[in-house]
Length: 189
View 1 (cartoon, rainbow, N blue to C red):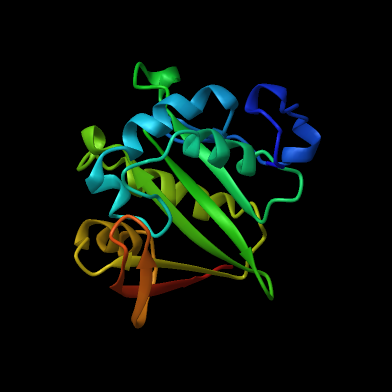
View 2: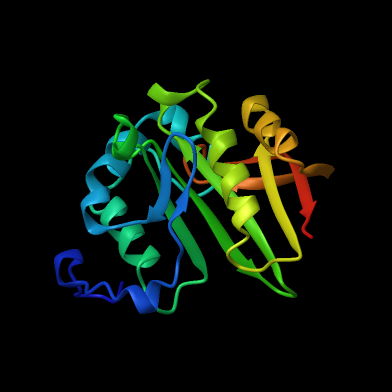
């Protein structure tokens, strides 16, 4: 979002977003919308959720979730972000988010987080499986990583056909530190 642009002023053109809605058994993956910012702020203000990601700060500064949504809706974005929306199945409107970031050479990086109240429900696995099956970027390879102190996320990836590639480190904004990671890849098609 450019300086001085408010989230309320953001116009959503479905042609610009060009993100499919992906249905699963218990929810849909849909593009974010401005009204998601409040629940994103609520879930990501939980230190455990923030520390499970590279980019979410803790404490969450004012306007951070609105800025995230605005970037996800931007025409020049490199990352497509989907809300995990359970309203069609009597679940919460926002259970978490999942994303694909474009990389060079028909490759994408997958990322996800689930609100802490929905951990150990299989929602992350179902979301990753659905996004992999849809392959909306037409990627030939997907990459993902999990912090080594988060074996649940690593299990989601291996359950969805990702193969361990090696150890690395990534910066965690919430932890203000480099954190050991496991890196995974999934060849498509």
